Structure formats: structure tokens, C-alpha cells
Length: 231
Length: 84
Image 1: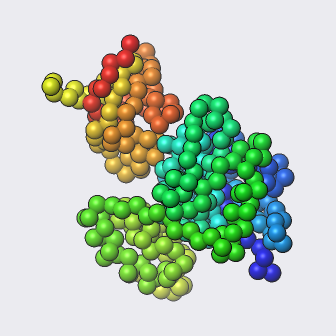
Image 2 (image 1 turned 180 degrees about the vertical axis):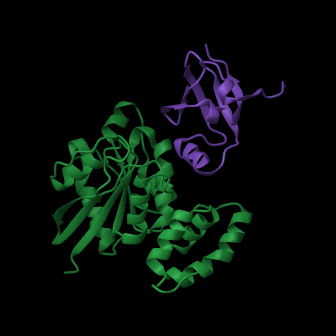
Image 3 (image 1 turned 180 degrees about the horizontal axis):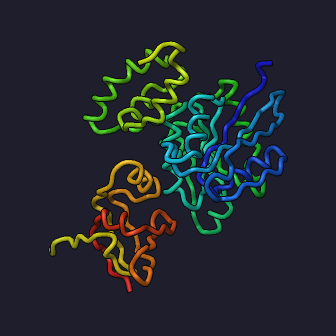
């Protein structure tokens, strides 16, 4: 129909990702905080402004470098299944830890919303968050919510809507690395782009290859090398 | 000024605040520790030690993480406060 969009939810364990998912979709998905709990992906839908938004609850992880099955599932979904929007859910009370994952997602994909959850709890602790400043620094929308009180949902849904309609364009901030690393990226990136085109960030893949990520290389071979062709 | 007092994380005492200066680990374990907040420049607190000194619980990036000696002795840092 052209009116259906997929929204992936990524975040650290225990940031209220599943609470948000359940509150939005009305499903009663139960996920615990031990490794491997959310391994099959839960999906639920919401109708908003004549659109159907399909939400996909990814496994909670601290990172997306495929140190574990969970990370691999979450990463592969964001990179290869290309959701229309990726919501990164952060815990407002421990942003320092949570930004690691957020910055990784900004490197991987373009349409990102940073969703700062547990804002009520943070305010109770005297934490004040300047979302405008964060928005400027990260180049993507930042929305403060409290999933358990359904606070901030209208703004969140509206922001999703404005990204899928193209009203908001995201320009995620890219980390700059040391000149040595940047020089290597410069060498690899054009070659990567020949293989993957514009579907996947060639810069991100180059970085992963420099890091020696063999699992990603295998995954790319599976998805991009036509059958019968071998390296 | 006195020389900075560089110690292994494994040798920290309860209450010590240590500013990480080097992480001498590779591969997945290094990646994992970085993800958890053990990065150069981060200040970690020794929260408690097991009776035999292994594992040790550290406060890092607002969370408590216990590390085995195999990892904590491969990280060094400057002792910035003794605590207690």
C-alpha cells in the first residue's frame, strides 16, 4: 500500500524498550533482562494518520558489534532489513552508558530517533536533559518519554510520521577517527560501495572490516555475492 | 608534584577511584569491556572485593560490573582517590 512502515526499537537491556513496545502496540510481550530473552523478534502495529506503523522489538544490547547472538540479530535487522525508522531507546538515568549504542546506530543507518525513556525517574533524581542540544550534536530527533506513563507518545508518533513522510530529514553525526583510520576508510570505502551500493553505509562496513569483523564479512557474502561466484 | 600512582585495576582496594590509562586486552573481550564503559579516561570505583580478591566489583558508567582477575589485571589506571 505504500502506507506501511517498519520501526525498529533498539536499546540497552532494561531501558524500557519492551514497556514502550507494549504501551504503543497494546501487546503483552514479556521480556526479561537475561541474555537471549528477546531473541525472536516481537512485532506489533499501530495506526497513525492513515499509516500503519509496524514496531519491531529488537533484543536489548549494550553494543551492536555482534559479540553475541542477540547483538547479531539486532545489528542484522538494522543494517540488512533496513527499517524505515530505528528508535534508539535510552535510559535517561544512565545516558553515559547508553550513548555507546546510540552512537553505533547513528553510524549504521540514517533514519534514527533517539528516544530518552524513564524521563520521570530522571527528573526525580534531579537530572535535567537538554534535548535541543542533543539534537544538534547528534543530527537526529531526540524525544523525551516515559513509557510507563505513556508520556511523550504523541510527540514520538508525530516525529516518526514526519520522518517517514520526509518532512524531517536526519543527518546523523558521524564519528571522526584518527587520521590513520580515516585514511584506511578512504581506501576501502569506494570498493565497498561498488558491492553494496547505497543500500548500506559503506563507511560503516569499512569500519567493521578494519576492525576485523569476520562475522559481518560472512553475512555480506551471503547477501551480496551472487550464487556460483566465490572469492 | 608526585608521580601519578599507576596501579592495576586488580590491585585496587575497596573505595579506590582509579582513572583508566591502559587496556591491554584484544578482540572480543576488549570490545566488551569498552562497551561496558571501561575506556581510557573513565574513572572507576572499586566497590568490593571477594574474600580471595577475585572477582572484583567495579562501579563504571553508573553500573556495577564484576570482573575476573584475568581481565582486571590487564587494565591499569591512575589512583585518583583512596576512598575510606
